[in-house]
Length: 478
Image (cartoon, rainbow, N blue to C red; front, side, top):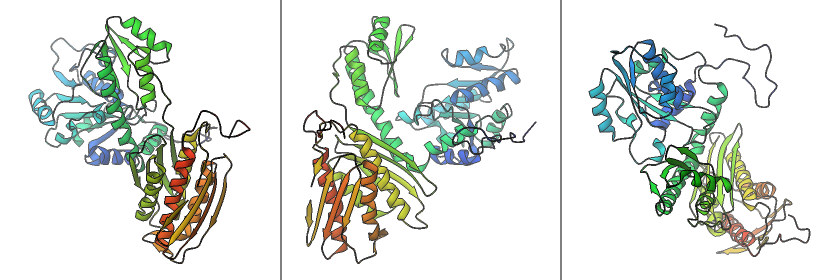
């Protein structure tokens, strides 16, 4: 088999290393093991959960065994790819879609042994039940399949994992084709599973659960809704075709499934409101929340920041620099908006990159949330704290202009470098496209620093306030 690289690099941006065949995805397996709570040798990365299922059918076909699986997709299609086993062929694998308690899974694994028990946990992150992966250690014939498609938004990248005891995974790997998981998919998966992404990923899952509950309650007034969880609702309307057509008119995707209809659940309330409006179940679209998100990866930091200017919570900051976390919490609290920011930075070197890049990411998220800035107050002003006095003036003009007047005699507050305070507000001004003028006086550097951040939050609260529908500029644009 040829393992030599291509004679030249691909003519694509970000294609470094793609001229070589993929290496074994050991780094991905190790990170998946941390996320799923199993040993690293109990993870076999696969090309999506469907690929994991296909390996089960492939293994059974090679060994002349049968597979018992639900009479549904994708199991039907996968079964059709292989010749039917002999009439009296032993059952090699039993596939379950439903999630039960780990204890129930362990009992069934014992009953079906020596056949493999394969548990499809493609929606596990959306469920309350514990994963069957917790009982892998005591069940040599158990394989649990996980997916990054829906819980991590990587449906197009095709990445998943088979979890099981090493010897069991070795059987599955014996029918694995060479270079099964593309390098591009591995890179995307490692980004999605990076610790800096976990806070926002968890919040997204919570949002889907909350929105699903709201949709089910509204839909149940007009049609039967099957029990379930995750970002798809199975409904049984009296006229499925009419429902699909009504949704299509408002651009809402749906699918017929016999007499049922698959309905999507979004993490965004406004998208679900459109679904309800299409079916005349309320949810008339109002002004959508002004939300913004920034994903910033450099050689020094990996950051995810999300803001909602029209919600007061949640507020959650994790940069690894405690005092800076507290300052950003002050900005969001006094600014009256939701902020979630997680950073994995090179703190072993210095907090500079973490603080600077976090400020840039926050500014980028705020800029995105402001959008065309229509209807905002635009300007914001000030704040005293004990003997310290901070004055912050903001103009959300779209034109960055930072100005900072003030000095600090104490070099550090905890691990926070006070000389970076001016840098933070310069980065914010430049990233969000705003004039930010800061002036601070006082004696206690802790008070002075906190006063600046609080004042910025109060000034921002005034500037982002909605006062009408017009762009606050005679030019008609900001």
